[in-house]
Length: 526
Image 1 (cartoon, rainbow, N blue to C red):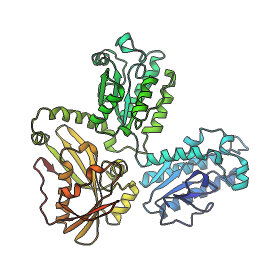
Image 2: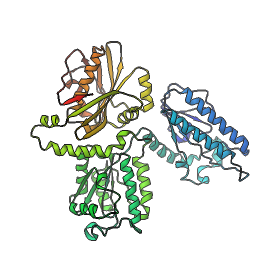
Image 3: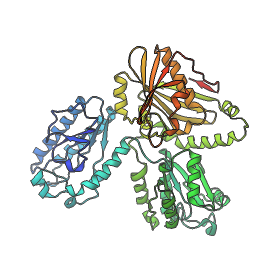
Image 4: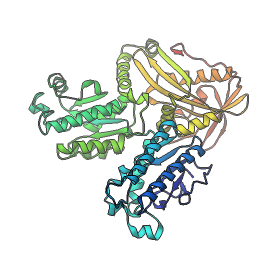
């Protein structure tokens, strides 16, 4: 099983039974060790006496605290309690609501104190429905299901999105049109001072929309422009129009020209070194949206609102459907600067006839450190979303990584910087000791943004040298093929590994750590 659900009524229709098991009603006596994670999904019981109900909610709070102490470091997702059936008989009686508030506050306190505890706001789901839609008393009395099974399909969609957020998975890049998308009007016709941004409606709606985009950028979402316009006119607008909240510095890449938008999006993906499936395209023109849908089906293309006053709702749906994650890492917050630095590197490379000379000019510094409280979240994020340079593609949560480290796994991450700036934490290696002289590589991955500069080879050779100094004589490592990692199928041979066994689903290598691992002097290790 993947999840084990603690519950106080019937919730089976809301989860996939193949990967989920359930406690007995109101039973916390069994904590199965085979579960990968736990879900706390208690709902407010149906009681007429507010005093009795408040006391029962307080006992549920105590049970939650007990479970947190029993599950170790495994993930626990706690749904907030929402009062779906308000049977208040006296208006001024707040006992039940105070008990609910206390439970939710306790859950948040536990999440703050324990990194493996996450709190999910269940009201985000329930507020979409009327009380009649949420509850069908027939099902409650027949099968003890407080939530209406008719909304189970919607719940599963919502829960899948929450799982993605908890795993810190999201789209990377928002590609934006300009005319009637970022501002009202057409720049080529209205001029830099004539487009609608700020002031009265509809300019005020576009201003709110731009402010939201700025905050999205601060949260690590790459903003790119793809517009059929004269670039000089757009630059003039940024210089001349004081109401623009979205500035040049918020944009990591742009294609402002007259070629087809699908081609521009391909070029943006190549420039940013991200997959097309990491991109969301926003354009007011339905013809342009349809073109991208047809030619680039891996790019997400939401419908743009017909009226500017719908832009705030549209922004909320964008965040909810594509860009929200449970928490930000330091690397997320610095994304815009990282991609701008990449553009500077690309421009600098053109000055050199020999690539080795270019690499030496970068002053590349590689910092290797063990997993700790400051980097566990980023390491987990990389295991969840790295596909191309990922030898085994094992996916791990932060809690699972902590558990592995406590059991003896050696977990390292790599940060890279050069004279243009930092790439952030962009590599991970996890090694499991077999005995005093033999170890096994569980995970080796690098973010695609550092590839192509020999950093992957230098990092691994440095790690192999370090393992040899620790007394290990040999290392086993595997390549597990996926649809996206074919580029690394021979990597272990490149760094000196010999094939030990091979099947259709895995190739295993043995690396003799007594050999010499050469690292070019382009790289400085810290």
